[in-house]
Length: 365
Ligand SMILES: Nc1ncnc2c1ncn2[C@@H]1O[C@H](COP(=O)(O)OP(=O)(O)OP(=O)(O)O)[C@@H](O)[C@H]1O
Ligand SMILES: [Mg+2]
Image (tube, rainbow, N blue to C red; front, top):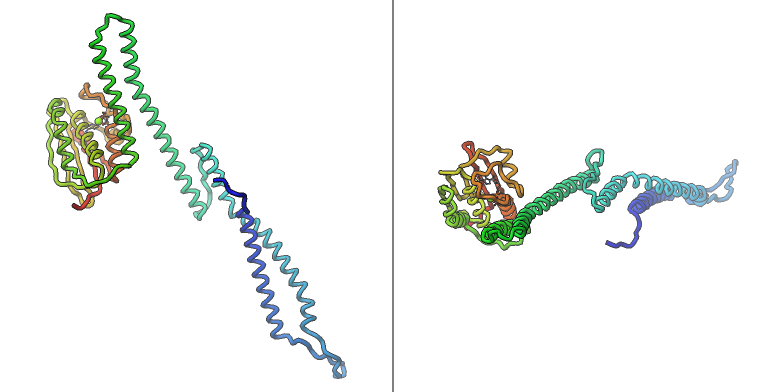
């Protein structure tokens, strides 16, 4: 904001301090003067040594003559003392503010790594500085995460494009190449690029939290997702069990269906090669409704499980080699859950596979 130049806070504090000191001084002098008026007579009779009256002496005016210059001197001293003392005191008090302002300027110029780290015991300025430092740390982490995400997304998007280019180069150099096969492979690569772009768009849409909320029953979504994915489950030799109690929450039906589909899809494709099982349950737990999806599969360490929700993070070995995911499924699940004010918990099962719980705020029907 463009502001008109104004009086500095240090000067204002100095003037206020000196002003108060002057007022206090004036009040004190006025009190002294009132006391004198009350107890000192206006004039006094003067007597000669032989007790003969010798005129009237104006006591008060004489006193005033002596009092006034001294009072003025005291006031002048108080003024100078107030101004100098106030200036020094205000400077000392406001010094932390200068450090905070400098740090803010640095941040404004793009340096997010700078911290104020104001020493000393807790007070209002220390609290402000600490809050500012905490905000900077969060901002820095967030920016780093965004940069990592953008770099990963670009890298992932480049892969299908680079593959297409290679395929086209090879076809151009070989005029007798099988165009049918080329078209088939280009089609597959293109489909993957579209999947990736759609996942990215979905992620950004869920992040914006700009959806309309309406009552949604998670058990119906679970049923719908399971039904849609049944052919895939059959193809992978996986059996799905569902156990759905009414679980009413409020949110976007489309996004919550996406979340459920991603969960069940993962449970099918990251399962055992044969005879895998998936259990999908919904229900109410106190103030929340929960959707749990549990599946058999490879053993996972808790450390690995903790990283799986990061974008483009894929697990170790791929059991079903034909499924080459983009690694955004769980990131989308996490973002949708958070956008609905819920929590996502991943717990590796001792026997292998994973147990995933999505808890969302319950809505009373
Ligand atoms: N239900 C599950 N059981 C076992 N491992 C899982 C499960 N869900 C996810 N994973 C592991 O977490 C990784 C990340 O999952 P995520 O859904 O984010 O990506 P993806 O499935 O590889 O790709 P896509 O974006 O196509 O879903 C997977 O590669 C897999 O290793
Ligand atoms: Mg997935």
